[in-house]
Image 1 (cartoon, rainbow, N blue to C red):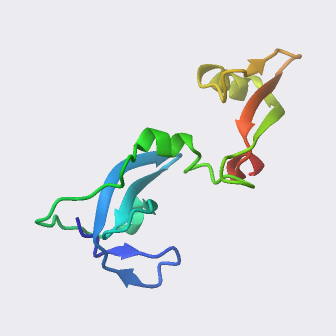
Image 2 (image 1 turned 60 degrees about the horizontal axis):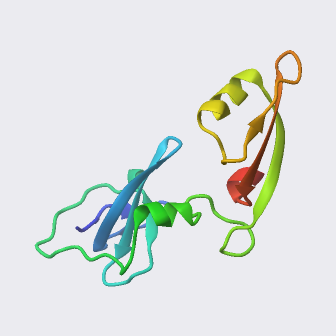
Length: 137
């Protein structure tokens, strides 16, 4: 696959690159193409809105040895880890309104997550999560 309309992060220059698609990931309201460039094995993420056009090449796409999209995501690829690449686990404690805590009850942050009803409108949530830039934000 070629992505001739791919623009860099500052949208200042148009790049023409041969890419090997590995999968699509939806994160919030953005969709990312997970891929490698040319014959390299380092995996990259391209926000799909930066691709202006693409054409199918006559050669097969290649994928890195032992690459799995689920494992790539589980290792923290989209959480932008703080500190070392293994992703230190921290204990997150927050007090949310009941609406936000209801959402977390349906989609827990971790297997040890707890939610308590404190008083009107407030619910403390505790969970072990990876120390990421997303948590800091």
